[in-house]
Length: 145
Image 1 (cartoon, rainbow, N blue to C red):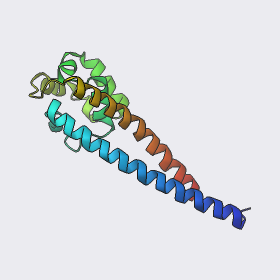
Image 2 (image 1 turned 45 degrees about the vertical axis):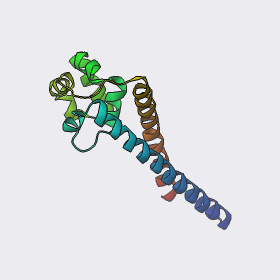
Image 3 (image 1 turned 180 degrees about the vertical axis):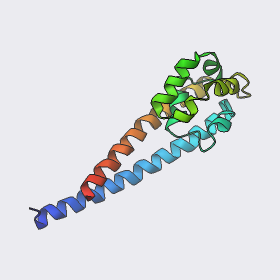
């Protein structure tokens, strides 16, 4: 039985979760923009493989596993395929040879220590917060229903 106190509590909880979702979305958007700019410098060809965005879960997972084009080009094809498959990039997992060819001919700059740290931090931040945002959205949906 929902009383007026329970109803008020649920309303306030929903408002707080909506605010948290909005703030988290803003932080993720900023990090995705920074990640896109960093990839444009270190591995610009990635944009031709992931045509919609290089800052979604699949490309970020790929870069987390293989932070430089050289590492990606040298990796066993099956390992790269597993990374893409695990991240949900099923269509991209079928085109690993094409991706590794792009990585082998990359015109990107070698990452200096600052870029390496930034890339590692951004991939960790994005992957963690993609999961948190999905969980938060799930809780909001449950409360509303």
